[in-house]
Image 1 (cartoon, rainbow, N blue to C red):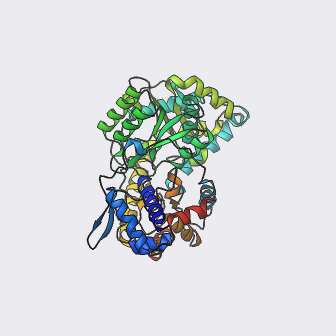
Image 2: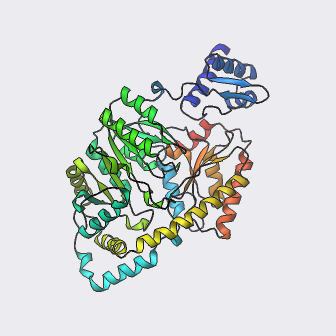
Image 3: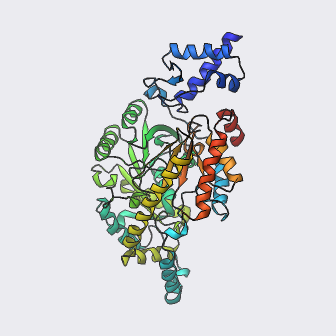
Length: 483
């Protein structure tokens, strides 16, 4: 019986490592802690750790504990396989969405800028003027592909991305999420396999579930973005129809791909016949003087379907996005028409007017400066007030931080405790197909640093400290929130 018990413990810990819960060169729980977590004797845990050491998966360091080997095979293609999404974050996201609408909850959870960072007064004037001078626009549909003037203004803006487009190349959508859904519907069929970044934007995971797709999670680091070596290995092993990638300011890591990585990504796509779905929703929010080019700009074989929106920069509630479908344009426009018939006319015209008169560039310059200042302040506060061992991303655009907590702290438990203190955050559970990001959470810093929000972040740091020695297992918490 003991023989079977220590093997089961070893198998469970190895599973945590292969799924990414414990990353290479990080410490796994101590023998005593694992004894409590698994409710077994210390001797049984010692046998399990010995098995893992013999397999080269972990290694003991004198006076420091056991660490995951840097050369253990978590990044081999054999460890990467298509998975289905079980919809485990529905309840979590539903709770988050409701919390984001509660003015009493600190708005660190949803990826929505506080209204102070949006050009609401300009849009209010534009909509008011339209209602006074052209009230008939509310009585007509703006059928797919959408407002010609708006598509013309988007084509002009896309010159900054390196893309030379005609208005007819562009289809207006209900935000970027709708654009990604339309791209997947046109490119894939139920049962197909796609590749996604890991961690991934949670909307991508939900799209996978709704469209009955399987996904291969390719690790995405905040320093380098999607792991192209693993994508290449996966492409050799599996028939990948599409890859959803965010080259600029990825959600949630903030990663931006280098020019060399972009070239390599396009080469992999061309070599293995993969369609790249580019999510560039944060591309306009780069802190550089000149924004990064779109992946689409260097697409010579028509393999990139480009998706973006104004939800993060102008008006989330307007739900205006767009897609450059290329060879899939006809299918995309068909699906868009069937699903929504038309995009609201007045919001399209209001944004087109905002773009046409040069107000957008002035707004972006001001907003980028504010976000960059907020980033510096937020990172400093987290690193100063959270426990030692906390790691924080350092994006060069957007307004999202990816926080990695010490391994003894579970982000789902932190999320629960934070809500009781009226603080919002989005735990790592929402960004993967399983529970591999249990010690991570995403934090929105597009907030006004008034006393309320400042106190909320300081209180969050205190909560992390109080949870540091909690002995609940990841599995206990995962089960609590997903059943």
